[in-house]
Image 1 (cartoon, rainbow, N blue to C red):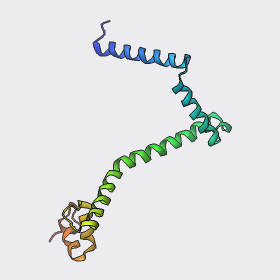
Image 2 (tube, rainbow, N blue to C red; image 1 turned 90 degrees about the vertical axis):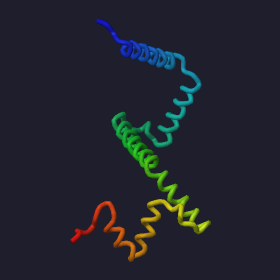
Image 3 (cartoon, rainbow, N blue to C red; image 1 turned 135 degrees about the horizontal axis):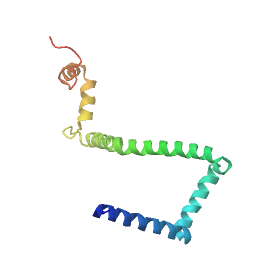
Image 4 (cartoon, rainbow, N blue to C red; image 1 turned 180 degrees about the vertical axis):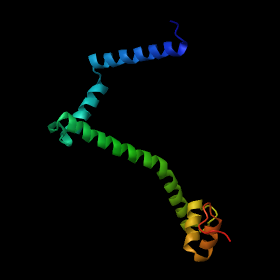
Length: 131
């Protein structure tokens, strides 16, 4: 059986990672002790040491899910909101609306009833059927 270079490199990488993991478990370093202390503080703070392993797994899974969703939402939507707030602050300080973002321009158009109908008719999804 001949192995290609990708398979050989994968086997070498997995062997190196396994060796590093075994060395870390046999000779705990200061980083590993610090991580163990933080895990202990987490379990004592939230009283997880009183739970069964199944309950602990369910609680940690829910916490991981919520934190993951929060981080994903923050990374997707926060930059756009920061730009909108920065553009509005620039407008309030300078009075120049040439740097307003598309979301600010849409909000300004929706506040004016005369331009709202035109924007609805010319928008990406037409709200009314054309005659």
